[in-house]
Length: 602
Image 1 (cartoon, rainbow, N blue to C red):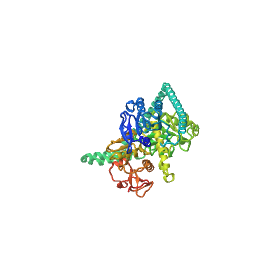
Image 2: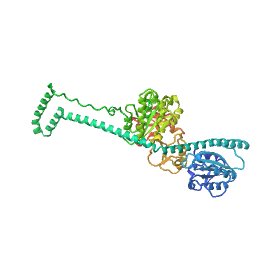
Image 3: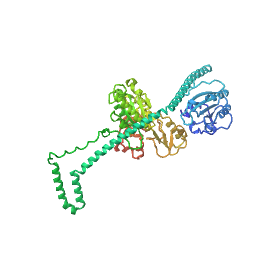
Image 4: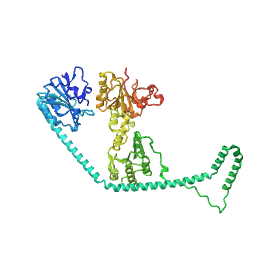
């Protein structure tokens, strides 16, 4: 929630806002006060009726102020005055009990409290100095009409239930902290036990290197034999004679016919019938049987990694869906260990349904295919040797392959693999269903969870949007801030020629920069007079992820979810935006343009 959303419903009958935060915080850019409400600095005078005081309290006294400063301001509030306290503490650590006695002592009632979506301000509360019990406010900030007794009962009942819930949450936190401490102690205690495992892993690595060295030596012998065969071949000797004649035409031209005739006669002698006692020619040695020469093509990368790299035991459908947002290598029983070493993935993923259904890993983990179980265990050992995480993706009942649960996994994900938006039909599913899948159930969201477990590049970074704007006055600055922070899919950066007045965006975690955008997608909001719904960027990103288009926008014909030859671009790939080409030429250059329903400005 923004500070304006918490404050403005309580500005009725307020003519002056008094900044009593002490100067550590500069809250003016967050307020966007309506006409008729003035802002002034605190003059240490009483806060009268029709005035609202701004207070702050947090863990950093220099920035947020302390408890004593808040108590001093509360003592100066007169009946009818109001206040807004902003807290620098996270909601779960809010020490409201330290202010509760002061609020009661100075006859201040809390009308509403809510979390704030800022980096250094996490919660806020609106209070009123009153001599009689005021009706509380509901979730939307509207007063609940009632008499004093009903209001008191409501507050008392809610306090009891809230205390019950908070005690349960505190007990849960204590249990989790105890479990974490126990796990840390066990990890430290098992450090010595892990020495033997590391020694065994080193021995296995030595054996693998020795085997690779032997295979390399065998390969060298094969290549030497082939070189010797080529050096004695007639074709090579003819080629040498021709090259020699070309280098010295005068002498070489005279000698060339004789040399070629000699080669011909020698070839006839070697190709004629051999005497009975002649030794049989030795066959050309064959290349050693080595799985490395028979690997199918796999996706590899030679550039700095900017995508998640997955090696896995996956179903074909899951591998295809993952490949839209990650580099995917499917491991097979005969080449899995080698491919794991060659590709050096970020994570090894074993999908339970790939072991329980049809495919090369069928019956793995059931006890009916011990060779596959052994192969999978070797893959996990190899991944651990490479320092990579091994994750069990349990998208099917664990009873389908109970043996998988006995292996040593770094993490287990109990969820399906998500839905790829391109597989949905927006006309049949609705726009609303597309939004739901985009935010919570898409394959990209599932892969993001996997990336967080392994520290790999997050696929959700591809959804970052930069907004281009050029506000000309305070009204347009306030409009830009409201439109940006109100988006259901919030932009990560705003590019403007002048960052003045945009402190609230920075406090809300949105980067404000000059120059060129850095996010993968760009939305041009230069015209701030246009109304933009809160779901604009969400719908545009849903359409882009569904279509994989380079630009998404509106057309005069209100086309919806179709590729078009031209459109008014609302969301453009960064590289295309920076290319400087006209939108009318994009389709002719091979760029994909996708239209969503909208209305062209008149």
